[in-house]
Amino acid sequence: MKKFDNIVVGLDISNTSISILKRAFLLAQQNDSKITIVHAIANHWFTELFTSLKLEKIQKHTEENIQKILQDVDTQNIEYSIIIEKETASTFVVDTAQKINASLIVIGANEKGDVNFSLLGSTAHKIAQNSKIPLIVVKNFSEKKYENIASFTDLSEISYKSLSFAKDFFQKNEISVIYAYNQMSEITLKYYEEIENQETIQSNITNKENEKVTLFEEKYNISNVTTIETDAGISSALSKYVDTNKNDLIIMGSKGLNNSTAFIYGSTTSYLMENLKSDLLIYVSDK
Image (cartoon, rainbow, N blue to C red; front, side, top):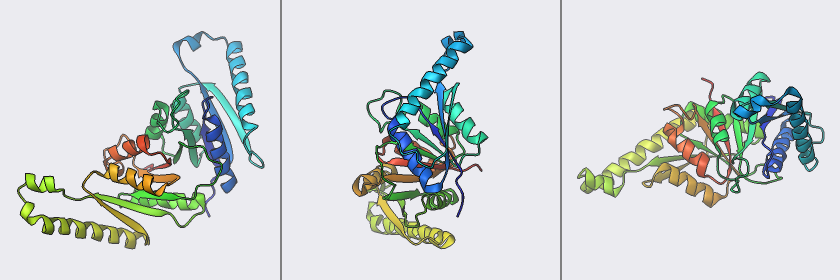
């Protein structure tokens, strides 16, 4: 079994901090990981005017606030540290994770003070864009382990790696694998004046997609891929799947959200990150 020694938690001080910390320590307990909590003091122009004494006072006050929150978190048997610096938040989180060779980054979804916990803030987006380390985005409050996990796939090697990482990290072999593809709609067929061949064309598309799924299953020894056919858009189909199945964690593999070859061409990853109500595990390849 792989070892996951270090988890970095990117934390602001907000009403969602307790949810992020509870999730992070629960994950650490599953893998006997050390936690490094990082908090960035806003790197605005006026902070340049702070004296070193003033900065130290802010750092001390912030650490006291974090320790106060941790009083309501089960930290038993988990080694943790807190790092507070005047930095850009997204850069600080990613750089710290790389420096200590972290196995995972855990962050919250929303901006500081945002009343809607499920919305993805700009800091979370930037971390997802720049990190080469798996990232969990916490969107919900829960004190239970993830149980209803699903992995979205585009049948690529990266999506297989994301599934493998999740199985190792969560020590869970039974994870649903979901593949969605676009079927040619009646409107499109009419546009191309092929409506009379609708049955043949749609059947051919279905057969080709099923062949691709079979090859993926055989190549990676996977046998539980659920296929979703849609003519309403992949993002919509996958969102509907999550709403119906009440998943508590969705896994997505990506080459990076700025990359044109990201999971299902990138835009789907960004859309799902923003709109899914479940927590997210974004596995970003470093290659």
